[in-house]
Length: 172
Image (tube, rainbow, N blue to C red):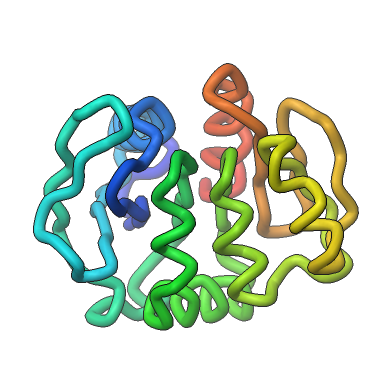
């Protein structure tokens, strides 16, 4: 149980990518982490792209980076809503400033762009947002997983095993 005593947030919003949320949640719990689902406050429960519900434990405006050991930003269409939430962006910026682990997969990179934390960083994402990340100053790589200091990024659900392996190691 590498993460016993660690508290990790997983961001959710409407139309999150079901596998990217739940695979992450279950792997983190399996390693002993206390996992909390964090939303923007637009709903108490969100539906994934494939209909699986996620009940929020807390909203981003009530959460401080000092109380977390890391965060997972899943993809799907949720990041388009997450990136419009100033409390979410503040949380991501504060975690990055504290050099705490941030894991981001698929379209989750949009949140990193909007938080202003990608300039000069190496990362990957779903190919559709490659240009957005490059235009925000990132060095984009087409790799299963990219680790750059406190950032762990991956492209798609197929990359989840490598994504979580690297994030868990970074959090441990």
